[in-house]
Length: 204
Image 1 (cartoon, rainbow, N blue to C red):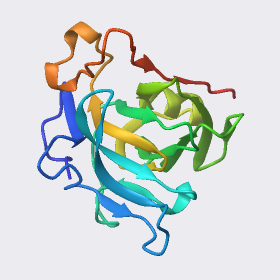
Image 2: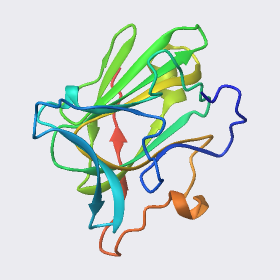
Image 3: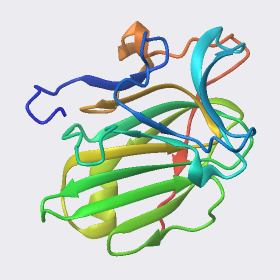
């Protein structure tokens, strides 16, 4: 999708305030389960429209980008950032990348797993979320190097499972301080609330 696009700075693939926030994504939730949904809702804490994914079974309720199964993102920026709200339920997301050995690797982070497991083509790791809104910063280059001893080439696919609320999903070429972020990439919260960056622990 973005392979032939000039990539630097910030590249957003989901913004909840857009007219079609899931335009690039495919949405999946069981029609026969009234407790499962992917929909746009209003979040009182940030006074904004967000995407909400809720389900008793997080594996069957998710959004994935690109929408077409045979397409690839082709994003070479090494940092993935997700701005999500902790709903105090099970939650996970997955990133599929391509390394310099032309191998596809998957990284799955979840708040219900206790230890990191590195397998030939998938690494699963625990994720700690703070209360309220979180900024998850995922260093793809670092995880590929540490997990497989290879170099990150590009991201092929991003999948976000229930249960969470999403404000934005984007890639960057480096870590940016809060002061460096464009206004539309900031999460403006009341003074009493703080958006805390999640911590990922990779124990090899």
